[in-house]
Structure formats: structure tokens, C-alpha cells
Length: 267
Picture 1 (cartoon, rainbow, N blue to C red):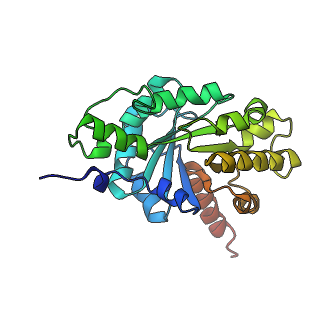
Picture 2 (picture 1 turned 30 degrees about the vertical axis):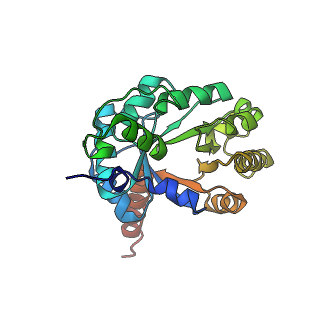
């Protein structure tokens, strides 16, 4: 039976961003089993990303979570540990519909990510045959590669002063979809660690949003889960992707609240 590739390969995050809607994201840093995908979907998140930069997840566990997310209709991303092709392409081949790449400092860094994430003619990603994104169905390579290129998101992290100095050039790189500001790392590098209300961080968002608007890219808010007021401010300025926090923080926060409820009972 013939199946249209577009009927099984969709990236709802790309679709929402194209409609200028706000995307909610959950970071997976603790749970190594597939249940987390269903939990994220039930909670109402648009997407999750498995944070391989900041934990010891294997690519096997990462792929299982991504495939579970695909099955329940939530877009899976992976924050890879480096921009090396073997990290980028393995995360994508395992089921991710996009990568979030740290330590980007220049347009050349960004171009290397695109080369690793996209199939020819836009990149150098190697064809792996049937992929989980396609339900392991076989399609002509030309059709599969184009559809996967269209569906795959490439996000680069803006975490350094050098990246900010090159924000215009990075935003102009063809194949980059989004630039996400890592507020914690960026303020630390600026010498204002944790000072999220500092004008320097505000200016970083303003500059990044302006550059992305000019070049048709999107902006993500990261590292501000403790400051929903600032998240709302930056969304109003033009950011559209919000990283809301980690599964670890959500679990710990709920546990502390329940323990406090009992400990506060007056006898």
C-alpha cells in the first residue's frame, strides 16, 4: 500500500513557529525510559529535548525516548554534547527531529552543524536507509532526504560573548532554524552569573531577536525556568521557543511541595 511521506513525517514545532506561535519545551535529564515521552505529551508540551550535553545518557536510551515521542506526537530534539558530525547525525538517525548544539561561537561553527544535520545538497549527512521517523518504511532516497531535510530543525546555542559578537553572521547561515540563548552560561561568561535582570542579558535577547527577524530565524529562551516573568518579557519581545525546565527539577519541586504539606500539618 502506497503511503505519502508527508502523512507520517511532521514537525509540529516547525509548524507552530511558522504560525508565530509560542512553543513549550521540556528537558529530559533524569528519566531514561520511554514513559517520559507520554508524560510530556499528557502535560501539554509541544516538544522535549534529551540533554546529552549534561548527563550520561547513551545514544541508545536517547533514541528510545525519541522514538516514543514520535509515536505519541510530540517532537523530539536532542541537545548533543558537541557539534561533531558523529554526535549530530547519530542523534538524528536515532529518532530526533532536530538537534540543539552548544558551544557555537561563529558562523563557521554553525555551518559545520548544518553540514552534519542535512542531507545533500544542503549538507553532508549520510543516508541511513529506513529511519524511525519514516516508520521504517522505504522511500526513494531523493524523496526521503528532502522530506527529512524539511522536517529537521537545527538550533544553535548562544552562550558566549563571542557568539553575541557574531550574532548577525550566525543568524545569516542557511540551514539554521533557531538560536537559543543559554541565559545561565551567558550571564556567567559576562561576569554577572545568575543576574537575569541585568541589562546585558536583556540586550543579548534584543540583539539576537533582531538578527533572527532579519534573517527569518527563530529565538529560544533557555535557562530561565525560575523566572517566568522574564520569559514572558522575552516572548513579548519576539522569542517563540521556551525551555521550561528539566524533568529532575519538576520531580524535585513536586516532591518538596508534598513533603512540606505534610510537615506543615499542625497537631
